Amino acid sequence: MNKKKKIIISCLILLLIGALFYFMNIYSTVAADIKLRGSSSPPLTEKKQIAKPASSDHSSYKGQIPDSIVAFSSGYAVVVDKEHQKLYVFYKSGKYSKVFETVCSTGKNPGSKRIAGDAKTPNGIFFATRILENPGPSETYGSLAFTLDYPTLADKRAGKDGNNIWIHGTTKPLLPQQSNGCVVLSDEDMKKLANFIHLNRTPVIISESINWVDQDYLSDSRDEFEKILWSWNKAFVEKNLKEIDSLYAEGAQIRGKKREDLHYKIKNLDFIKKHFVLQPRDIAILQEGDNAVIIFDQIFDVKDNNTFQGFYNKLVLEKINENWYVVDESSISEPADRRLATAKDTQKDAVSPEKIAEKNIRSLVRKWRASWESGSMKTYRACYASDFQSRNMGLDAWIAHKIKVRQKSSNIKISVNNLQISISGNTARATFVQQYSSSILRTKGSKTLELKKSADGWKIHREIM
Image (cartoon, rainbow, N blue to C red):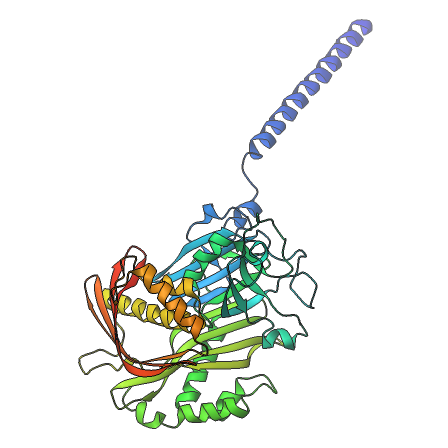
């Protein structure tokens, strides 16, 4: 009997051991299956990256913008992504739209430029100051270049040096990181880019890598930037120079000729502010790292012919001890060519097709004047319609004639005053008083540009002097 009990107990033990191994096997199989199925979904960190991608393929992020564009009323902004070797142009009219994208080449070495000869492209917010036609060997510089205002005051304050940072073309095959610090495009793309750049006005933002955000994204610093802008405007309208000084970093306050110019601009404000709301217009706020720029238009005078005069202002800011301060200011006075609102007009601008057309025509006239004055004949030609006719000349003959005029002249200066625009559907007339001077000629008289709207925008169809 004892022997039988031992056999039964041994069998039970063996059965228990077998059952244990069986359930352990089932458990491991189920766990492996759960792990396998769980791996088909990305971790949460990957899902978060979709909101602010860091990828060279930005096509899947349609509608997003670089976070360096903090606020923008209207116009164009150029943005360069050094990491992915891309250049973009964004346009703001209601919503942002990407109107141009191309590959580019930047400095051979990564990082922001610090010293001359380091083969690095600077990071920051810059503006094109000149257009250069055929600036050097075409295989190196292409047929067109824009000079950038590097080093800015902010760069100099940071101890950076170097110069001759351009955006230019090349006729050679474009390779990544092949320049000595410039931003380089193919020559054909460079010609396209020229259509979007207004000298001293269109920002060029160069970043190590773009951080993409939704259009309604609000920067942490936006409130502070807007507070500085409206504080500056309030102090300007109230002619409170001490309050303006308080917005500047220690030692960076406006001095010398700039302060004299500011005195001149505020002397008539007591009369103007009784009749008009003086506030900044066409505002743009841009940020790259610890540097920012606020640009805007400001009225400061009224002329006898019921036109007002303003200036385009640029406040350069720097983050110092976690606070933003103005470190530089530059303004460009605009001719008195803007009509004052009549009694029937509202104080707020209504966004209508006529107003948009008028704004685009004014931009064309500025581009036409600046390109002729600077000698940028390709940009000048682009202002005209292909079927242009004037003085019995078509477009080709007209441009050839103008090139001969430039070859005989130097120191060409043009002013456009009392610009008045009338629009009728897809045609328009721009009439103004032109004052022209050069080494061989000085004239002043009324001029009319007859314009037509095409697929490429407003173009000059005829000139009447």
